[in-house]
Amino acid sequence: MATMTDVARCAGVSVATVSHVLNGTRPVLPHTRQAVLDAVEELGYTPNTLARSLVTSRTRSIGLAVSAISNPYFTEILQGVEAAALEYGYSLLIADPHDDPEHERKVVQLLHERRVEGMIVAPSSQPRELLAYLGRHRVPAVFLDRVVEGSGEGGPRFDQVCAENTGPTARLVTHLAGLGHRRIALVAGRPGFSTTAERITGYRHGLAGAGLPFDERLLVHGDSESAGAERATGDLLSLGAPPTALVTGNNAMTIGALRALRAHGLSVPGDIALCCFDDFAWADLFSPRLTAIAQPSRDIGARAVQVLLDRLAAPDRPARTERLSCAFVHRTSCGCPDPQDPPERLAQSQEPLRPRHTQQTHQQTQ
Image: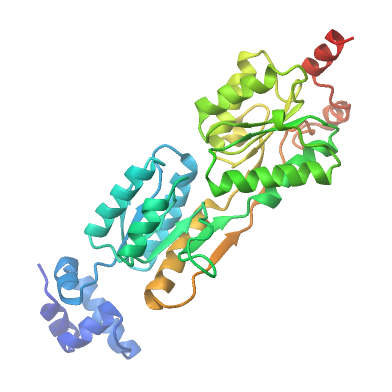
């Protein structure tokens, strides 16, 4: 196996110069740098990262604590984190906190004991122990997706990277209201998550902007998972005056809501319109195709890495919260015509939406 001394001899430079090129610790003339890189490739030299970490006290590793296994949205974030970490020469240690506060603290401690230089964490709905551990051990950390308000005086103690939630949710509601819906329901996520609170705020803003009253019976919690959303949607459909349109708060809850609608014999959008927060890979394959808010998942992950590296370079700089914009993906589950349809079918689909189960409920009340 080639050593750094072998690389130096092949390139005709000192071992110190090879170290500066590989570690970026000092500027090196371009032709000298290229000679070292050519020698590295020719000899197949691989740096001993373990030995280097013992000397420098740096592991060039990042800890990532997200529920990637149970949530496809976080899987895309993970891909963004991994790509950015690799680009900057960092390895990634991953742990799944399962959105459980006690387990969250344990996996963060485990990552810390592995001497990661910093952490990226999607905090649970009750992150008190997480905040205490990170603060007590002064661990550089970035929170992603979910923000933690008031974690430090004068602003957040930790850097945070997330998507916009309020405005995009309001956009879904106003879109449905523009199609003539007056009873628009929201299947919200787990209480305690900032994403849940912000999307509820957006829902209420959308109703107010459309001149519609807020009806607390049309706001239910699906606890950010499929089974919870299925139960919550069933409760909505059991109301005396059920909703004619539905907004779901994440991709897992969209699946649960669709199961409930199918169990009740309802079609989308013929009987009830549906819009969802979170686009996902197969949303365009559903029939109808799902109108959704697409979050920049991979960009969130990549940006979290950049913000963490900024923190490592300047530990005392003020913490910041960055929000990335989302995109409205207009498809057909909302009841709008499909632009991929032929012209004659587009003309037929311009008829006003008249949800079937709403008409039946109205007749029963006469």
